[in-house]
Image (tube, rainbow, N blue to C red):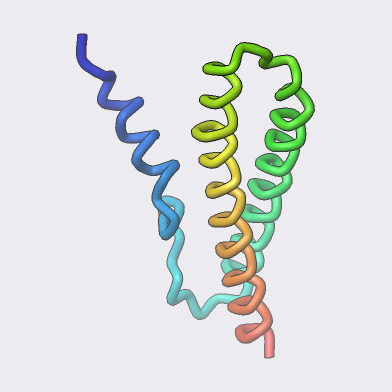
Length: 102
């Protein structure tokens, strides 16, 4: 049985460190649009940080070695990479918003 294409697409997107969201116009000249992306990425980053905190808190409950290795080597690595991407995107939009508001 093959992998669901939606799952494959989501996995590929989740691992892309340079991915931007749909309709995210990096060249916008509108201060309000830049502020909107700051809010969007702040919310996403907050969500991802809470997911990571929960994952780390539950990790001691994963006692089987193979399961623990999978959680640490795959799940946490991916979550942390996603968090880093969101931090970069948020920093970009904060800089862009500040520049456009001058």
